[in-house]
Length: 307
Image (tube, rainbow, N blue to C red; front, side, top):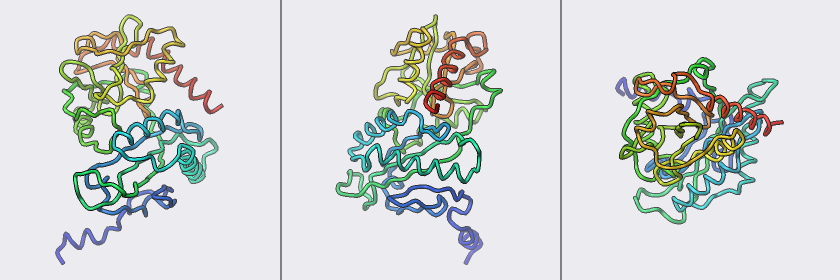
């Protein structure tokens, strides 16, 4: 036995993973013990979809909207949803409650529920295999909030051409494009990579991007070139409540750099101000009044859900 073989055999699979509870194909088990077949099409092809649901004070946030997007993604892959929305919620609540007990905190910690469905286990073939049972996996972990200092000053981002495939509206587990694009910003210590396709804004590596100009919040259209973030509908509501105009349309690169404010939105970032892009100052270089109002509205919405 060579030294390489000896080293790898001495490491227990999943030894560095937490013992928190997860759900896999009908069974609750410790995350470190969960296993799937190497012939699962999610492993071989990335043939699956996922959702990430934020949880505040023990309550999944905008769960119905996440389930609706899960349905849309599964339909695009021609996979029937293996569970009802009520069954998904029951699994999520079970994992959230178990995590809260393990954390032993008086107040339930903010969490992220990760849901994944793949086509299932089958012999390797590019054709969509029929008649296989989907693989269902759900886990939860702590949400890492954006540090207060970054919220106060805004964040720096970089731009890049959008080189990903043209079915970005599917929340697919095939995320190599997102990995490459996010690494562009990680390599220079930036928060996100804002991407452009043919000179027009698409989205960031793992966030939607919003342009504020003259009191109007602009977003990209809900089409196959962007993932419709759950915050799309929420930001529209927050804009209406705050008296800001809201519009979805194609946005040129020049408009992005000339914005009064730029915003990111995602499950983990909620709403976050971009104050530098490619080293250039956006607006006055500080989080602006539209960001401040929308972020405050976001927090009010969270509190209303958990009240």
